[in-house]
Length: 223
Ligand SMILES: *[C@@H]1O[C@H](CO)[C@@H](O)[C@H](O)[C@H]1NC(C)=O
Ligand SMILES: *[C@@H]1O[C@H](CO)[C@@H](O)[C@H](O)[C@H]1NC(C)=O
Image 1: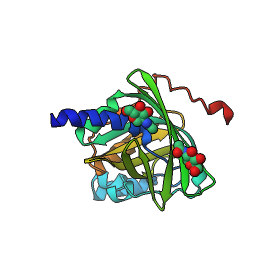
Image 2: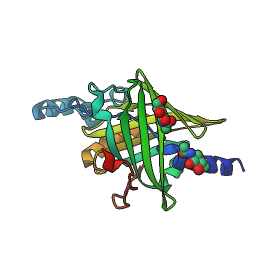
Image 3: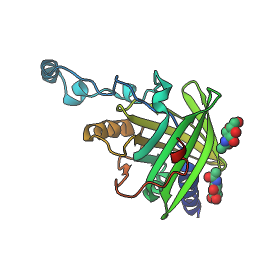
């Protein structure tokens, strides 16, 4: 009975509050991955293991990120991959067939409007909430769920958001990868996998199928 309840609330958080993921993005030329000249890589390979030599470690991968230019975060983003924790929230991501978010600045530099369009249970769920940005943390409240999260370093033209939320006595967390196009380079998927691992999310992450149409955005034409 307890798990049934957890499942139900997971879906509520997911489809009603979930895409509440928020805001902010990362777009920076200083990408996550290290580029090394080939001779250096070969030299390091000789000294130590491949993973240690060629991959950034968890400390770098999970560091909260503040983009130099906040404008890079604004605008429309399409969901590509995600994971949740604990299990019911992870499973709830299966029902998300497509999703977009749109981040808009307001006259208050600490307030960002988050809009979303989730294709869930064969219908579109649109919503809008004001999010408060304080330092690296962004918080918003939606349908009784309080979310607090931040962005992580990721590929350029990508947005990686992770948050924890509380709804009454229920808590959970998500990590969600967005791009401008809904597509992502396989090498960036590898980085995402490492970040998921570093943060101890389930490693069987969910992905957008790339086919389900995005929900129509009634405000798009006004921009
Ligand atoms: C809150 O949840 C209810 C029922 O689950 C839903 O109808 C409503 O649209 C949600 N509100 C927001 C702002 O998402
Ligand atoms: C966000 O804040 C603005 C300014 O206070 C307000 O006009 C608007 O209705 C708010 N939007 C939501 C979804 O709460």
